[in-house]
Amino acid sequence: MIDSRLTEIGRIPRSWKLRNVSELVDDGILAKPLDGNHGGIHPKHSDFTESGIPFIMASDLENGKVNIKNCKFISKEQADTLRKGFATTGDILLTHKATLGRTAIVGDIDTPFIILTPQVTYYRVVNRDMLDNRFLMYYFSSDVFQDTLFNHGSSGSTRNYIGITAQLDLPILVPPIEMQHAISAVLSSLDDKIDLLHRQNKTLESLAQTLFRHWFIDEAEDDWEECSLYDAIELVGGGTPKTSEEQYWNGDIPWLSGGDIASNHKDFVVNTEKKITEHGLKNSSAK
Image (cartoon, rainbow, N blue to C red; front, side, top):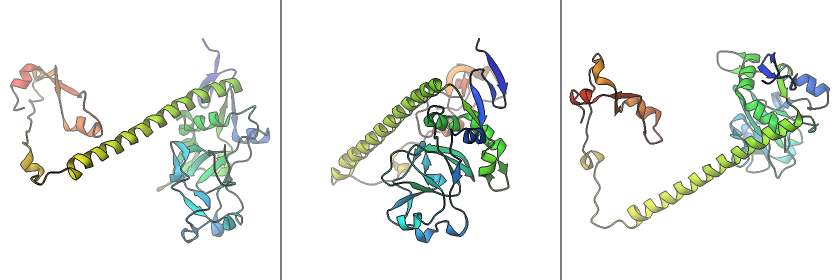
């Protein structure tokens, strides 16, 4: 049995540490976290340009990465007038206002830095012998940290919020550095495989659309005709056995309901929540 101790985030191995952000800052492990510029110097919609310095909003944090291709941009000249919010490669981003708890790591960028909105905080690891920045991102994404984040934040009628000062009290789990490297390596490998599958799916979707257009549009014969879906198919409805008749239910025959379709609207239905008996099938109006 692993020797463990109880902490505010639950039981952790006794050899693992739990430090708050301010302690890691004081010990020179983290730089003081900062968000984007507030007030009058905050870039406005009219300041956006076609290219330049990426201006990162909460919506630009997607699946652990920063979407720099589709984000807004501001000019380098305007960026140089700002006071803070300059994130660089390797920084971990965390949304702390309205959209609470979205996180990502800043990858390789072609600009000296990216600019954050006031809704996004960056965490910069300055001593990587003590803290793995990728481990920090995965920890931020964990259920235990997300629950802690919401508990530390203040919620109003329209938005959640946890400011920089309150973020300094957030607990950070710090296993031995070798364990951090091992955890981040495994999770990073899984992320890479997921990304590969997504890219393969997009390639297959593009191929399917190309084939569809070739066979059903480009190669369409002159004698093809257009009709409504109602004229082209036969509609077949089902019927439901009485729910009060216990001998009709809990059998082996899948019973497809609207709920089964709603929960699998993008996939194949391979199982159903309810099943009926042969007796139930014979005594229903199902076709």
